[in-house]
Amino acid sequence: MPKFMDVHHNMTGITAEQLREAHQADLAIEGDESVHFERAWADPDSGIVYCLSEAPSADAVQRIHERTGHKADEVHPVPLSV
Amino acid sequence: MPKFMDVHHNMTGITAEQLREAHQADLAIEGDESVHFERAWADPDSGIVYCLSEAPSADAVQRIHERTGHKADEVHPVPLSV
Image (tube, rainbow over the protein chains, first blue to last red):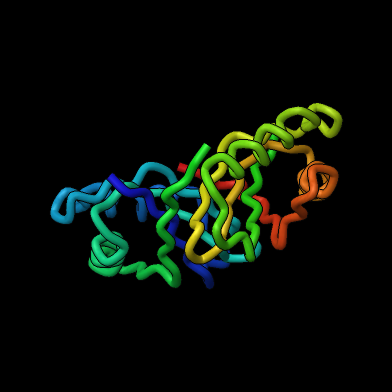
């Protein structure tokens, strides 16, 4: 399954609890689009959040994020990894 | 140890072998700065590469990347993760 890295900006001040809740909300419905969100990382100071997922397409990733209220600003396929 | 996500642009056309070689070059000297590069992901089409590391500082991450010939365009602390 292809991997994707999506990026959210403007999340300045995000807390550990908010990141966990957002991730849990994605996990709760990700199966509807055959997506799996593996990890997420956040910088409260710059407001950037990165999410790593496996999914059939970038659109599938975005549809889950939109339904849970946090549309990504960028979704990049990352076919290569080490 | 703090975690960092660094981003490289303009890596269009990067191959799996080139990503592996770049990562290995970082691993070979990362101990000089007490950095550890955990993972890296690349999109040859858009030319974006993301590297996840643990390090004492963003400057330490950048010093390793500079010595191995691939300075990062951005280095973000990511104190929160799930």
